[in-house]
Image (cartoon, rainbow, N blue to C red):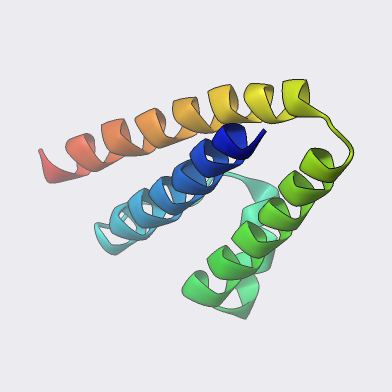
Length: 92
């Protein structure tokens, strides 16, 4: 379970970092929930969203829901890949 959480945490850092880069390059956040959080400020909203997601992940770990976390890791891997594609397009 610890390894799954480490990967989850790393993916959250990667998602936050690539989101910040994309926003600075002129990209926009498409997720309406994250947009709502970002209404308090782009970086503050992103940090708040990540803290909430990490709390949920720790709750899943404490309740032995490894399968949920593995699925979330797959989803966030796709999100980070998408962010990298957006960054590449914004740089082109």
